[in-house]
Structure formats: C-alpha cells, structure tokens
Image (cartoon, rainbow, N blue to C red; front, side, top):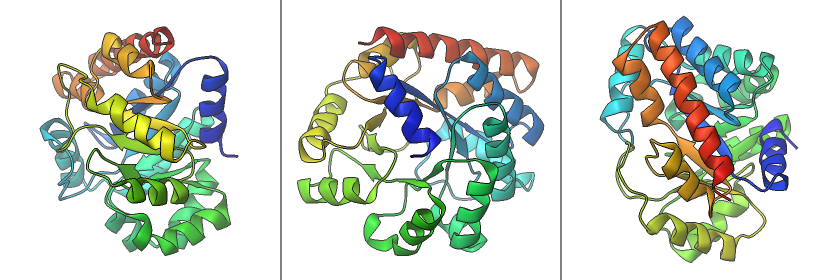
Length: 266
C-alpha cells in the first residue's frame, strides 16, 4: 500500500472523510507555493494534490488558470512539481501530482514513475487520461508501486464507472458537476448520487469528491457521504488575493477550517 492508501484507510478507521487539498506549484513562485503546500500539511490536510502548471488548462476554471498561467510564464513544470512532492514527503505528508497527461508523456512515463517513487510521492491524478488509453501508465505505476487516480462524472455510464474503478488505485475521483473547476455556493444532490453509484458498482475503492468546496460547512456536507473531500480553487484564491506570506497564512487557516469540517461531517 502507498502512503495515500494508508491515510485514506486511517481516516475511514477514524470514522471520517479525508481532506485532499490542491495547490499548483510555481504560483506566485516555486518557493512560496511550496511554503503554502507545507502550510496545508501543518494545518491538517490528509493528501496534497501538487498541481503541474500547463499552458492550455482546458479543464480548469478561471481561478486555477490565473495561477497556473503565471507559473507557466515563469517556466515552472513537472520537475518543480516533483520537488514539491519531495518537500511534502520530507514533512511527513502524502502527495500526488495533478496534471495533464501530455506533461507526463513528454517527460517520459517510466522516467516519471521512477522519479515520483524516488521523491516519496504516492502517484498521479490524470484528469484527461482514460483507462482505455493508459496502458503505459498502468504498467509503469505497477512497476514502481504508485497509485493512479482516474475520474468519473455524473455522465459516466455504469460500464465506464466499473472500468474506471478497476483501473484506479488509491481512490476514484468523482467530479460531481459538469464543467470546469471552481468554487461553488452550494453542494446539491448530484455528488451524493454519483458517490452512491460508484459505491454500488465498485464498493472496494474509496471515492473522493471534487465539487468546488470553499468552506468548512460544505466540506462537512460532502464528508457525510464521501471518503474524501477535494478542495482546490478556494485554496488557490488565498494566494491570488495575497501572493505573499499573508496568503500562505490564509491557506493554512482555510485548511484548518476544512479539516475541522471533514471531521464534523460524520
């Protein structure tokens, strides 16, 4: 088992959902972004998604795009993300990368898997890669003991959910709304329905939900039915509003609120 699987299992044993926090490396700088990521670890995040900046982030909303576009202009890429993964691991945290498949493919799939393992990371979330086309990644991740996280959505058929869950390891990422990423004001019912479908069709694997959560109360709502609550845009907004030490502190404060929320949700 990877550190990711271990921490999800521990959260379940404790009767709560896990908190998964996303920040892209490189905004406002590599150094400050890693400080903010480590602030999440200190404040109680269970899993860190280290975002890999990409020049055409078609699945990301305006908040994440604003941060990653600046990082791309600064020349930040996958090597920097691996440095951030290592920093998280050195601090006793759990990290995966979150980025587009083209980045890993250009880096070299086997080379990436080896580097991720060496950095102490648990694996990768590949939002634009479907299991049908992931043969090379499945082979490399198996060889290096890494988790691979694929996505399902409300539009996924039962057959797609079954095949995605079978190919995933660590957890299944449930994108509970159609469209790009971004903070939202309400949770709605689609998330619980999607988690219920995954649980019915693939009961063995944890299901973590990405829904645009921005408050501890929203985190508690999702924690009532999901194995993990994924938060991204709200954390990124802290650094967009204050790309400095104050922003890092705001990331830590929001993480504490969200961590309390996932612990209250059950």
